[in-house]
Length: 461
Image (cartoon, rainbow, N blue to C red; front, side, top):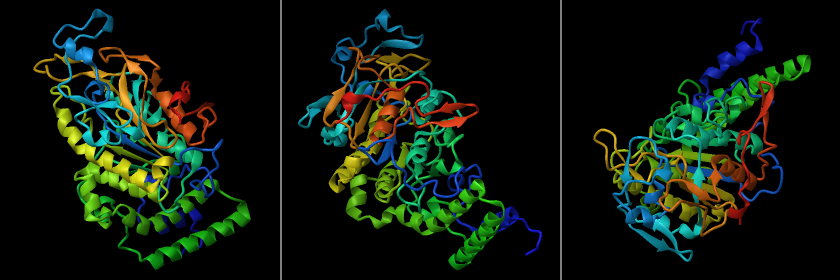
């Protein structure tokens, strides 16, 4: 090795053989702490929950066809919407749901026929029927729900959570994102932005392929044996100690070396945790087939191993965006109902549901009217003024509904819950004060809840 080779040159050359470097920008040079960035941290106050699973039905599921029954909408089916709704051009007459609602469980909560399996677990859920957000566009809706802001360039909820709490398994990322490709806005939805790069979400393309070595590229290197990589890491640690003795600690480089250590350990852990073939045939059958089903099973395996947050996007772009035909919801529900129910059942059986927050929903809802645009007349348009979202476990009340939209399901009118309120409540259950979880950037303090957000105490157990 040339004597004039700098430590950074050594790091650059010797790091090339490590597996998993493509995962989550794992060598993020902007990491701000000398190791330990992902080690578990004490919450602000005693927590009710320890981890989060967000089942993101991207595209905007229709609340009036799933979890918010509206008899009046069916009664006035085909009639013009009242002027009081102040609908934009392109909306046709009112359209009642073609799907039947029934009461389920001891709570008697009404659920659409689209989700019969989830309905059997409705007593474990709190159905928030008064969600609202700021914009009816997918891009801004996804950003608000995933990152708390309407503009790109802010950390995702999972990044804030791992920044605040670290994670419980140093051999796996703290924040994992599962999607077979990318939804609208792509990596902006799991970025760490101005937080240290170690907190960025690790995106795994959970396609139909079951072999984890094919799901995660470069999970192992063919250029170096494990012993070779161990010797490289030990050499880097020695170089680091020498320079620390001479010049003091360099936090950015120290954090990168810690990330390399994690990358090295992940080569065995990742192959195990993403290998759902290790589950019994009966378990895999309960979850069903398809990337979302596989993602739900992977999510359970990840939280069992201490991953702090798992976010599963239902598919690429906006699969729930049923502009042309609301009956598309039937096909989509068939792919999501069974795995969601299986995940809830497994978490409850294992006791993990008590300390795991499960969020089920999309970026907004859909209008109670037909969409009339060109040849479209049997679908529904975007609706940000009122929609439903399910939360379960982790300190939420169970078997209750909260809030309400108007009689036709257009806007939240009772106990309204903004997306920032949801985020504040999730952080609260994790033991974090959303107003104290801040990061100074560009001359001001930023937080997940932007400049708003209130804990919704009425939905806490």
